[in-house]
Every structure is written in C-alpha cells, then in structure tokens.
Amino acid sequence: MVFEDTLQLVLTIFGTASISGIFFYIMFHKKNSKKDVEKFEYVLQTLAKVSDGQQQLVGSLRNITEMQSSAQADMVKHVESRLTEVQKMVSENLLGSATKTAHTLGELQQRLTTIDEAQNNIAKLSSSVLSLQDILSNKQARGAFGEIQLNDIVSKALPPDAYSFQQTFSNGKRVDCLIHLPKPPGPMAIDSKFSLEAYEALRGAKSSVDKVSAHRGFKAAVRSHIKVISDKYIIDGETADGALMFIPSEAVYAELHSNFPEVVREGFSLRVWVVSPTTCMATLNTMRSVLKDARMREQAGKIRVELSSLQKDVERLESRAGNLAKHFELAARDVEDIKISAKKASRRATKLDEFEFEEIKNEQNIQFNKT
Image (cartoon, rainbow, N blue to C red; front, top):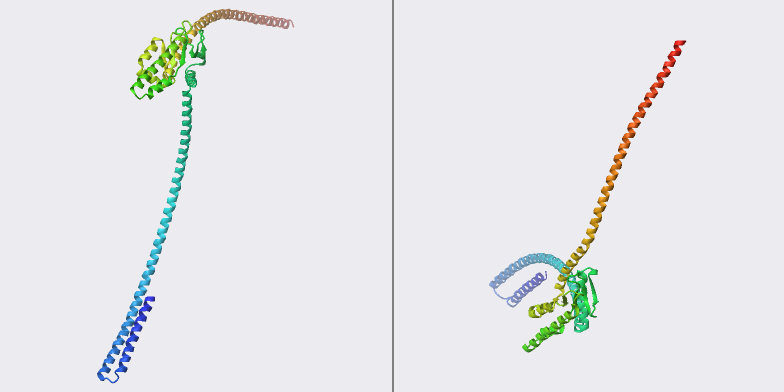
C-alpha cells in the first residue's frame, strides 16, 4: 500500500507539472496563431490519455500489490508453519538427545564407579603385595609363611589324625610336619625351605660374572637345605628312610628342576625329595591312599574275628532252631494224641447217653402194660 500511494503521488506531481507547463506556455504565447491552439488542444488530449493511462497503471499496480500482499501472506503462513514444524522437530531431537545424554551419563557414572572400585582393589592389592614383600624380605617371617602354606595344604589333603605339626624327634630336632604313615615306610617328615635371596640374585644377575656367582650361590643354598633335612629328619627306626623338602614357590621349584637337575639328583641320593605346592598336594593324595589301604588291612583282622563269631552264632542258632523243631514235633504228637483221646471220650459219652435213654423207655412200657 505504501508503494501504491507513493506511485500515485509521483504521477499526480507529474500531471500537475505538465498542466502547469501548458498553462505557462499559453500565458507566454497567447498571441499565437490558430495552429498553436490546435497544438494546445492536442496536448490536452494527450494529457487526458496520459491521465487515463495513469488510472489504468494505478489499477494495475493496485492489482499487482494485492497479489503480492496475498502471496506474501501465503508465504508468511507457509514459513510460519515450516518454522513450527522445524521447532517441533528440533524440540523432539533435543529431547531425544537429552534422554540419550542422560542415559549415557548414567552408564558413564556406573563405569566410573566400577573404575573407582577397581582402583581401590588395585590399591589394596598393591598394599598386599608390599606386605608380602615385607614378609618375604624377613627370613623368619618367610619361614612362617612357608609353614602356614604347608599346614594349609596338608590339612586339606589328609585327615586330622594322619599328621602332626612341629613334631619333636628323639634327637631333639623339630620338623614342620610329620605324616604318620604305617611301617613300612613309617612316619615321613616334611620341612619347608625357601631360598629367596639366592633365587633373586640369580634372576637379577646381568653380567656373566654375576650370573656364574648367582648360579653357584643358588646351588649351594639348595644343597645346604637338602643336607640339613637328610641329617636331622631321617632317623633309622623312628622315621621313614626319606623326607620331603617343601618349596612354597612354583617359580623357585621350576628354576631348580629346569636349570639344576644335578642338585635334584643329589637330593634323591640323600633320600630327600623336593616338592612344590602342586606336587606336594599330589604326593599327599598318594599318601592318603596308602593310609586308607593300611587302615583297611588293620580292620581286616577284626573283620575275620567278627565273621568267625558270626559263624558260631549262626551254628548256635541252627542248633537251637533244630531243638525247637523237635519240641514242636513232640508237641504236635501230643496234640494228636489228645485229639484221639478226646474223640474216644466223646464216643463213649454218646453211647452212655443212648444207653440211659433206652432203659427209661423200657420201664415206661412195662408200667403201661400193667395198667
């Protein structure tokens, strides 16, 4: 509408200026000829046509403006509807994104909680490892650690009456564990030894000189332990002719058997067998079978005695049953005899009853005849 008013104003000014120009032209040329009058009339006609064209142009512009306004209104409605749809889609997407984000944050929180727990467990494990290192660094504490591990393995593999801990022998020496095996072979000693310093020196050696020195040190330490066990815990007439050296570390045991087979053979010659936690459990299971067989042999004599007594009881029962059968037979005979006597007595009583009745009948007949 503003455009239409502006255009109409411009045309009005243009028409006014044209008429004013013609008016001034007439005023300055009023003495002109007839031709000028005709020209003036022609100009007026032209201006009239221009005015008609102006009105037509104004109408066309009004139509165009109305069409543009209608199109603009439709465009605004369409844009508003699209904006509404876009806003709705954006809201839905934001809501979905917020939900997914909240779910993701929840899972992340759970995972962070799990990670915190794992870190706490790692911290506890680290402290436990440090405590274990402190234990293993102390020789006495390391010995106690080996004894506790040995006690745990033995108590799980054997019944309580098959072993004893810290057993003292006749020579005054005390062993970590004594297995009460029957003779032969007899009670067998198990002692815990842990050559940790020599093993760590062997694993930590870098140069060839250090390796040779550590190799000799480890071999000497194990040999010393085997010799001590052989001298202290193998006693003729009191223990078995062999003993076990318990190493509470699979790594040390594997190192010994892998790289020091001659030391293991020396132990065999001294009747000392080296065992680890795994092989010790297997050995104890074998000992449990031996103990079970020995106990079954011990019970075999008692079983034979009981079977003999049972046989005597059966024979006595058979004799008494025979005597009872004889008594039953005699009783049956007596019963038959009693039955026979009862029948005879019954027949005699019947005859006696018939005899009395006939006698009375005869007396009645005699009296009737007399009358």
